[in-house]
Image (cartoon, rainbow, N blue to C red; front, side, top):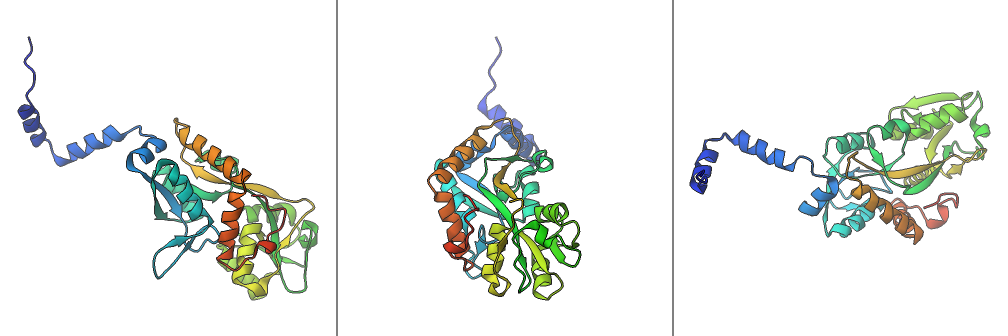
Length: 281
């Protein structure tokens, strides 16, 4: 008969292990934990938070408090698990990497593409987001054909869907690709660009902060409208994304998503009547 190993012997053996071995054992024990399991265990929901990206995110410099549509959504999602929201400062580009590296559980306001879907998962649409532009004073385009002119300078931020729309729908214009949206806005303000392509929510926010750049022009012929979704990690356990999809479908159905986004737009001075009816929530 084999003698059982005493607790004292186990403790003595553990004492001989280096600290790294204990850490490695703890890490090994947590391997395979899914997002929904981690949230349930820690009662925390980690989100990618993007300073200065109203209406979704706004951070009070004085107090450090977060506001905005995505913040309100995150807090409501966290209630499913009676959890607290943890804010991990990021950018739109880095939020994808943050998901992949398990720094965050959730990223907001991302446009799904086939290439991005290879890297992360996407929920059902949060909103269907139409595209249009801001234009120089005295110019009021209504169709993509109106800005597809050789004498017009059309600005966009490189690598975005604004970039895609510019090349697809205004290939004859003088296309000006810039590194950031702020640089694009400055180009329009300074007269170095005639048109700035932006999705509706972003364009309305830009006008809210800089009223002299308005109004926002929704472009048709065709109406380009693309989904904006939440991003999650790829994982075998699909329960987390299933909960998010149910949450999104419910809150879109009762008009709560629209209310949160209208509230976020108000942070930059946009009124409900300024939102084009084609922007669906």
